[in-house]
Every structure is written in structure tokens, then in C-alpha cells.
Length: 348
Ligand code: SF4
Image 1: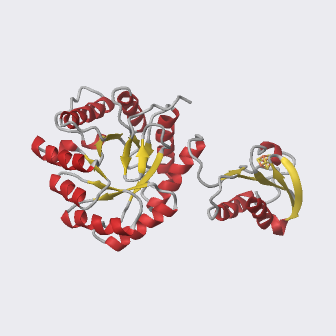
Image 2: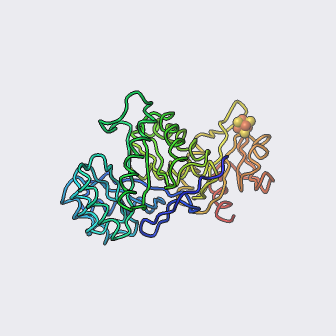
Image 3: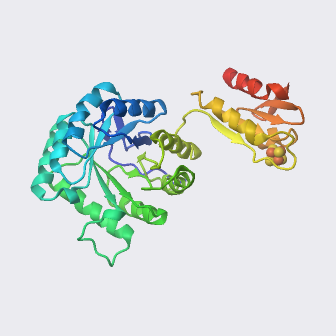
């Protein structure tokens, strides 16, 4: 795994992004921002699942004004997502947004961008320049690859902010296509000092979206690129946070709750491992500690195959062996498989 690219850290509310700070998990609400109570409720759900930063859509003045009420009801930093109308960015800042996400290219005249940057600077509020491959500026050179066009668009916008003496910048270059996204981030990572927000945009429903995101985000993180991640899914945003942590845990970049190791089952299994693994997963959701738990389908191979698990169960006909770090610690009856394993997890 490549060493992490060290970027110039920025602060969004209480959360540091970049430098040596842990890679931050973020998501976006799917409520109507003007519906303050529903938005607060969803942000709290996100916080409970471990989300560290929340972005909310700001499509109009009412949504921008709602930010101050939303902020009073939550503790996570709020990033206002703005398109086209610079006045909404000014209102969001006035209402207490901790960060802005905008595409200076669609804000229009330099004077409008300047007004937003000035207001952000006065409050030390960072701006994420978010370029999407699907909405590249008309000035983009079609002779270049999409990845290159995306990078060029971001560099132009960074230059504009830098010319206004503004450096609290974070950048994202998203595309649906995974190789394009990886290529674009690899390119820009060498060209700018700013932290990078990474993700695969519009990646779809959970079954495929999680895989696309894991391949894209996981590859970039393995290359040492990325300071904050968002998994975009057509699902409740809580699913995005769970998937984001699974990606980070897979690369040993963050610890967050238990890890479930379960064997795929095979002709040697004498119990329904799929059912047991699902039941264990349901129980583990309630647990915070970073513990590795194994559910294995046979006594002969199970403990050995999962010897790096903290605790585990290897099932045989009517009985199972409980083990810790690959060493047998007891035998339990089939009716007690779940409760005995969970008792061991609690004790660990
Ligand atoms: Fe098969 Fe046993 Fe391995 Fe599970 S642990 S896949 S049942 S050999």
C-alpha cells in the first residue's frame, strides 16, 4: 500500500480533513432541507452510524435559511451544496454553514465568485470545488480524455480561488466511470496541495453501488490518495456510512465497530452457516468495539482458517467449538450457538 499523500489540512467545524487526520466519512441528507425536523432527524441517524460530516442540498433561499435552525438541532458540521446562484452561498454562510460545496464554473461572473470567496474567507469557511465529469464546462477541450478535462476544469477553478488569495480548498473530481475517476485523482494528486474528497458519483443501488465505490475509493486509498470519502448510493444515507467504514476497515485505515469474518460454507458444513452469519451480523450491529468475529462452517478447518479472529465459532453437527485467536475455548450445543458466541464477544 502506498504511503498516504499528505495534503494541506483544512477544518470544517470540529473536523480536520487532510494532513495526517483520519480519513473522514461523510454523507448527504436525502430529505427536503426546508423540512427542518426531517433533516435534523436524518442527520442524527447519520451521526449514530458514525458519519462525521454532512452535506445538505441548498436549492433555494428557504433551504439556505433553514441551515441556522438545522445547526441548532445537530452537532455534526454542515456543508451547504450550492449550484448556480451565488446568493444562496452567501445566505448559507450567513446561516452558519461550516463548509460550502460549489462549482465556481457554474456560479458565473468572477464578481459573484469573488463575493462568495470573500464571505467564506471572513468566516474561515472552506470551499469544496466539486467537478463532475457529467457537467464539464463548455470550455473543456474535447480532444482530451474525460479524466484530463475534469482535472483541467478543477485546476482552472482552483486558480480562480487562489487568485482571490483563498486557500481553504478541498477538491473532488467525480465520475460514474471508475477508471476515469482513478485516473483523474491520480493526476490532480500530484498537481495540488489541497485535500481530496473521493467517491464514485451516482454509483447506483447498494448491490452494485457498494462494489463500484469499493473498487474506486479502495483503489485510490490504496494508492495513498483521499482525505474524506463519500459512498453515493440510491439508498438511505446510513447505508453510505456503513459502506464507507467497511472500505476503510478493509484497508486498515480506520477502526469502526466489529468485523465479521464468515466462511462461504461448502460441502463440509453441517449447519446453515448463511443463516447463522446473518443472525450474528444483526447482533454485531449493536456493538461498538473493534472486534473481529468469525463464523465458520466446520470444526476441522474453521478455527485454523479464522485464526486472526478475536473470537469465533466453528460449527459441527449439533455442536460447535468456540475459539479465541484460533485456540479452542469451549464446546456449545446448537441451540446456544448465537448466545454463546455473543457472550464471548461481550466478554472480550
Ligand atoms: Fe467449508 Fe469448513 Fe472452510 Fe467453511 S470453514 S468453507 S465449511 S472447509
